[in-house]
Image (cartoon, rainbow over all chains, first blue to last red; front, top):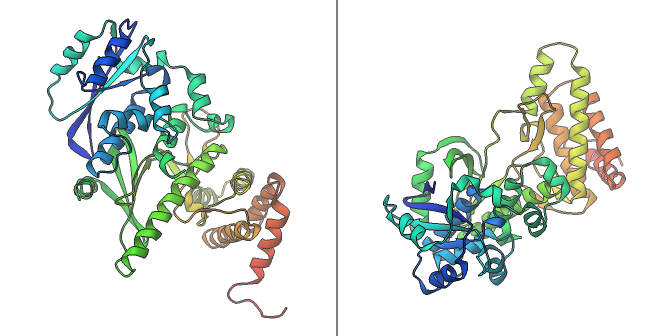
Length: 175
Length: 234
C-alpha cells in the first residue's frame, strides 16, 4: 500500500510515501513530528495531484541537501517547501503541511536502506485508515490546487494538471 | 562536489541522444518517467566567471520560456527538475512523436494530394507562433526540427509541441520577433524546397492571429532586406 522509490540521482536513497484517511489525531501527530518523534514529512494530501509530485519535491530536497543549498532547516521541511508554487516558506507550511483539524495525511520518509519497518511504526501512531498511495487523487481538492498554482484555462487544455503543477515546482526558484 | 559526481554517474548510464555546441542531450528514466536531460557543459575557452554566468543565464531563460509558453496554452516539455550546479535540465520526453520536418519531408515524398493537410499544419504553426510572440517569448532557434507532432491515441489532431528553448528569451520588441520569424523562414525554405506558398500560409495565419503582428511583419520585411548576398542599394 505504501510506495517506495529509489532516487536515480541518489541510488542509495529511497523515498517512501504512506497515505492515511479518516485520521482522528492529526494534532498529536503534528506535535510528534515537531518534537522529532516521526522522521518524516507530514503532508496535506488534499493539495496533491499524485505521488509523482511528491517524488519531484523529495528529489529536489535531497539534491539541495547534498549540495548544501536548502532553503529551509531540515530535509522534511524542504520537501514540504518544494511542493509549494511560491518561495514563501511559511505559506508552504500552511498549505502543504498538516493542520490540527486535518483528516488525511501523507507521510513522506526519505531513508537509506531497504528496511521498511518504520512504515508499521508510523502506522501504529496514526489513528486512521491506510490507503494505497495511488489513491491520493481521490482526496485532492482540484479547485484549490488550480487556484493556488494559478493554472490558466489555456494551460489546462494543453496537458494534465500534474504537468502544470510539477513544472511550476521545478522552476519556481527562478521565476 | 558530491552533487556533481552523482550526476556524472547518472548520465554515464543514460543514452546520449546528441551533442551540440551548447551541450549534450541524454535520455533516461527519472522518477519513473522517460526523461530528457539537457546538460550544458563548461566552455573552457571562456573565462570561468563569465562562463558560469552565461551558462546559468541560458539555463534560467530556457526554463522560464517553457513555463511562459505552457501558461499561454502552448505545448512545451514539462520540466521536472533543474540542477543549477551542473546546469542540467530534466524534462519530459515527448514519446511517440515525429518532427514537423520529418512529417513535411515524408508527406512530400509520398506524392499524394496532401497539400491541404500541409497548409493546415502551416496555419497551425502560424497560430502557435503568434500566441508565443504575444507572450513576448522569443524562441531563438525556430526550425521545423524543433517542432514535434505528438501522436495521440484517439483520432484527434496530433498535438504540436515546441522544443529546444535553449536560445530563448523574453522580449516585447517587434525586431526580435521579426528576427525569430526570419530564422524560421530561412530554415524552412532550406529544409523544404518549393514550400514558399506553405510558408506564406504560415505567415498569413500568424498575421491574423497575433494582435501585434503589423509591427512584427514590418520588421521581418526589413530584416529580409539585410543579411548576406543582398544588394546594397537603398
